[in-house]
Image: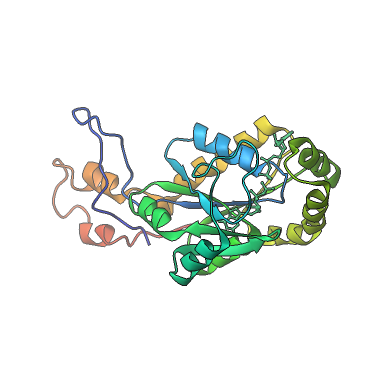
Length: 246
Ligand SMILES: Nc1nc2c(ncn2[C@@H]2O[C@H](COP(=O)(O)OP(=O)(O)O)[C@@H](O)[C@H]2O)c(=O)[nH]1
Ligand SMILES: Nc1ncnc2c1ncn2[C@@H]1O[C@H](COP(=O)(O)OP(=O)(O)O)[C@@H](O)[C@H]1O
């Protein structure tokens, strides 16, 4: 169903506020085996496509060199993580490579209510949890071109011990079969090409008929002054009875 919200604004020539669509934000989920390049690509997507908010997860893992609390993750103690679980503060959470990771619920819901698209960079277990709760999210899986390339990327990132790298590589052969749960697969060989492919997905998803901004359509073509009353059955359109396509 097409949702409409009262908080959104439509900019006009005399109103300089940015245009915010009259719909809930879209939830984009990106998963990939460790070392594929998902963090690199998610940062680039957020920087290059306007209107995306990259959710910051909570984790019990130690920060890597260069990572900042509140930017890559909120780095917290396990006790605090478990308290948050008990208070139902996570939209989803999972144990990955020996640490806990969770998506904070409130921030995500607030952004979506404001019509802002949200990007989650989470593992396959988390994506499957979201699939049970949120209809209409967009699932994107990123894969490296080969195991050999993945090994090289993990080694050149130099953020994990050789044992940790081995553990992550062993997990890939299990994780890869989850590709069936995702709607798009991006093979991250050339970074520039992968970014273009991801941008295409984000932009095309926004153009789907089911996400049409009904407020804009009504204001400009249905309730517009010159149109004669009775030309169309406005009530059925306002109720969102348009046929939807996926
Ligand atoms: N389920 C879930 N997974 C997460 C979350 N945040 C990060 N992850 C995943 O946890 C895994 C490990 O992430 P990280 O420690 O940053 O290592 P990296 O994937 O090697 O960069 C990755 O698959 C992330 O996508 C979260 O909030 N929930
Ligand atoms: N297309 C690519 N070609 C070459 N190196 C890449 C590419 N994408 C990412 N990398 C590099 O691979 C390493 C792992 O990337 P990262 O974004 O940390 O992966 P992930 O978040 O999936 O674990 C980083 O050093 C990054 O600069």
